[in-house]
Image (cartoon, rainbow, N blue to C red; front, side, top):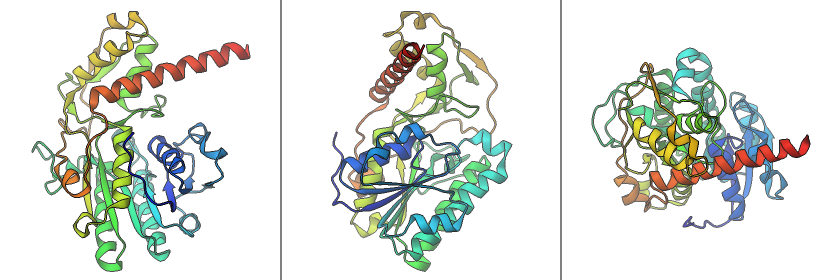
Length: 339
């Protein structure tokens, strides 16, 4: 895999027990870095850290970014911060905007202050494509956004504003990565707010009919996890002055409708279980706060960071399907053996 090698250093990954964070932890440890992980395990899982916890260069701090003291402790001796900790999901933010704000906005500000006081070299953070809001322009370019359509989107936009102010006022270098519908290994298929790909995979593997919100014409720039890992490394190592203190789309630059997604999943999963090919797809109501279409321009990341996607959508989806199938198979064998 073409990940850039960075001279070993000390890196804090907030939300390191989560889907993206744990993948980052593993990659950074493989590259020889010392990794500190801060997580409160509200959405992260201990199992995601099974390999990292065995590594001598890994330190776990069980704490909460809403607690300034936890943030202060986590950045001690750290040179870079990869801030992944957040409370995701548009529907969850609509149901509980206060908690979403406390985690995503107050927690983010706590981390900025801690990083600034500790004089870290750079603060790389997970931004979101939800920031584009009701902007109808396609592809989405970093300089053109609309009005946010959910409390979650507001919090992620406020993060960008805070990062910009801390750069100009306090000199804290930062780079925001606007993630576009990230998917891949370790993305949790369980819970009320599971993302569409792991949820549909789980349902199809159980021979249940997935329900698409709306008529299925909504489209997304689905982005495989390894592209996100690459962008984090490129953001950490960027040396051009004009590449820092800004935001980048983190995506493939491809658009796939939800109907197409469902058919691809059926096709790839039926290679393991032929019965899946005949499962019907259902349709429900459109979901509040959803952006109709999402397609990223990746020109800025290509120009300033040298980014080229490692996986395009269908390649990544095949990898994800394989991982879910093999993980489910392994879990079933463990249960059978235990009996």
